[in-house]
Image (cartoon, rainbow, N blue to C red):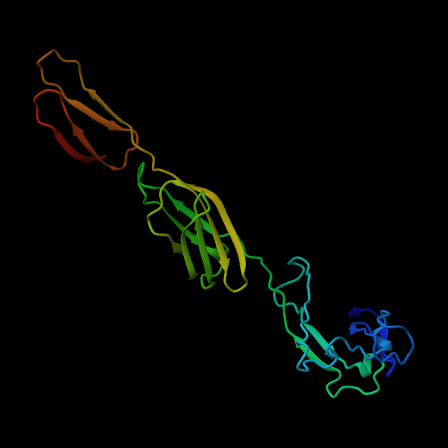
Length: 258
């Protein structure tokens, strides 16, 4: 049984504030079996756990939970390393001999990595018309601060399906021009610090559809000639007018830019 507490080794008189094994063997300093005082016994457990590894017991596994405060005040690179010093029962208990490796220090190096990225810069581009699947997205990770930073980008649709991903990408990333109108979310995962930032949901829309108008320039009598005028409400594009009639006259189709 292992205990974490302040104890005094019976053999050496050293004071320990860490983990030690308690047992029923070698009660040379009084006490009773497994009485919660590892300092008064050999610390031998089943199959000789005081000699590890010994062909029977598995090696020790130490697990630590480390909690840190927010960044800031802590910054990337702050030390949160751990040093483990291993003693024999001759140091921490009642055994009269100390181990040859007693007091050996095992260093576990670790440091803080802060997740302090900015949100990605996302620019969506609408589909060209109703029913088209040619919208696309431009994205830069960490607000585009460093074009050399490497990210994994993931684009999710409204059903949380990944519709595009770019692994180990940097700088300005452009999706293929294949996205239909809909709602999307982008996640940028910084490869260097495992920091994830998302943007969305946002919409890719159908482009504004023009509304067409047709009119005569003047009222005419039956059988007379007239002129038809065409107009749309979104000028600035190449517009194709397709004039048709129920009468037996040719269909006129011309493109005008105005």
